[in-house]
Image 1: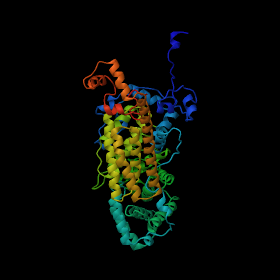
Image 2: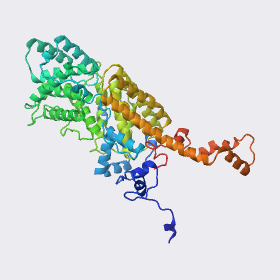
Image 3: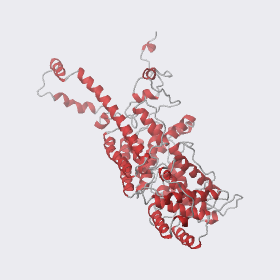
Image 4: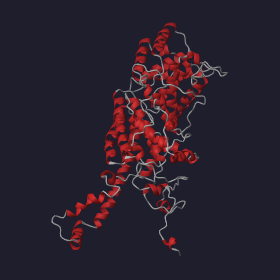
Amino acid sequence: MTPSMTGRKRSRLACQTCRDLKRRCDGARPCGTCVRFEYECIYQEGKARKSRRQQSLEQPVSAVKPSTPTAVRLSSVQASPEDVAVSTSAVTPHNQARSLEANSGSAFVRKLALRLDPKKNPRMHTFAWNAFLGSRQAKHAPVYRTVTEIVTLQRMQDLTAVYFQQVDPTYSFIDRREVTRHVQLRWTSQMVQQAPDAVLCGVAALGCLFSQVHSDQMEMDLVESARILLEQTMSTPATVTSITAWLLRVVYLRVAGTHYEAWLASSMVMHMIEAAGLTVVDSSSESALPSTRQEVDADTARRIVLVAQHLNIWMSFDMGLTRVSFSNMSVMAMPTPRTGDYSYEISELLPFSIELDPERKPSAAELEAALHTVLSRVHSIPPTVLAQCNLALCLCRRLRSIEVSLAETILQKILVLTTNGIQAAQAILAARAPWHHMAYVPFQIVCVLLAIDTVSSISQLRDAMQCLKDISAVYNTKATEDALKTARSLVLLHQRGKEMFASALNDILKVCPANQMDTLLSETSPPLSDGTEWMDGFPMDFSNLQYFDMEQFLNPGFFWNAGSNGMI
């Protein structure tokens, strides 16, 4: 036998379970380890093992200007030839599915649970997608009535004020003067108009949602009446008024409804927008295609399109479903700023969100630059802070899915943003404004903190768990209870894993007790004055190791920076 055949043999391919558990894999299908312990043996095909450059995140990215809203494009970031090659060659069904999983917070939770306990096979579940998941509608039997029969003029004016105080600063796509004018006309003429009445019902329903913790019959009747009115408009061409009413329904369903109902309504709005020609900037050009663009000014059209895109993209990402994209989309400028309007902060995040589509293939450098830009942004109000945090966490998952390790400086910025996210969720809870990210982002933060698994990240867990507990106490629904229970279960699994490591280390120390070590040292070494001089060489020795940073030395670096620690 030749010398080359007598050396240690190492499998060129290891299953994901053995990678996660840091065990030697024989490369069989299933491998010996998974057969022995009855684990699920999964191989990730087509993975190219490439070392990533840590310094790419430690230096400012000059190609991206976070303060320029109209120029935020991932494609403008310069990528290295290697990254371009990886990006263009990675167009495979497997990598597309991997991107789809990384975009979904639900899939991330499932993979985290599998990592903590590979014997379990938890089902996919959109935990904390919002605080209600349809429970508000389930408490009452809705009845269709006209808007003037459901609410009085004074009540309608109060609910309209709540809407423009709580919802409009984040999703600003309605002209307040037009709504006020139509309210006065509607209670004067008493004439039913389907689309305008649906707008009023949608505004009033959101006013109820953001002004009372528990639903009442009025809120449910408003939601049901808006739905019936909108269904009656589907046989006619889409108008700006009907699109606005549908978009109000999408916002309500995203905050309080169920997943598929909200996603279907969102997809319908996107198709209606395209059919109405709102995505075409130059309406003066000759076209045989139908368009209702003349009914609305360009600024309002931009606001409708951007809010609808934002909602459809993230609902599709969360559920792992296809988003609706515009085939004839023109380059759209940001809306004109309004006093008290912060929807531009959501709109400026949109180009990054679009590039995360699994159909697209952003390179590692582009994703890194996007994460750097998003982390550097400053947002003004809690709902947009949570949107920023949600996007940053998704970018982290995407980078990890292509095995890009994050630099320590970026990890610290992520922890700063997660702290801001928890504070924003608490502020939303205190205002009794149950935005959909109120519970969703803190739940995802818990998962990410466990995955990062450093002293700094674990120290944040208390605040994140307390936030989920406070939300569950105020909005006591099955959705918030399940989110809190699941987060606690993940923390418990993490604790048990740490206890297993501690137990193994304790067993090792029992084999070599301290008194035997003292005897051994006294027999093999010259006597020391106080028994501590032998430690003087530790700093010099550690300076030559990769693990010189104490937190990094104690951190397994399992999820986010395993590659940088030389573990994979």
